Image (cartoon, rainbow, N blue to C red):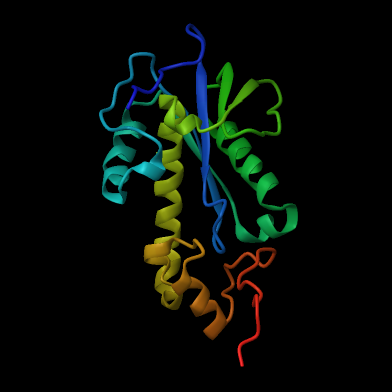
Length: 201
């Protein structure tokens, strides 16, 4: 696996941005924005999706302690239903960027689309969390923060097994929705239970 790149263009203050929870049936979408020092190195840092939960939990505090600046943006399930998940993902990133203690000169956005942030240029990078350190760091912070939220919600609604599926559409999650109905934290604009493809007699 090739090493992740430290920057897109040398000599400017770049910020990596990524989100977590876009495909979930419940809970918020969470984004992180991270500005790393040019000499930043952290063994095992990669796209959060290829890391174990244990490894993400180990890396998150190291990222926070060594980053020049980092911030989290959250858009809850009600806002997602109002503006749709794509716009909610962009809004979460905007909220994270706005909270940074340092203003970046350029944004590296994971994915292929983004609503421009006023005053800061950006580029979209498909699978950027597996290519650039700052985006990978943002992916880890977004994922660990969102997992903490879903773990807390799990205690009030254990039937959905959010402690393990974190709100993603697993078979057990959908069976629980079918059996007990939706919780106050489900995204009602999503297809919580797929329509039957055929009738069984």
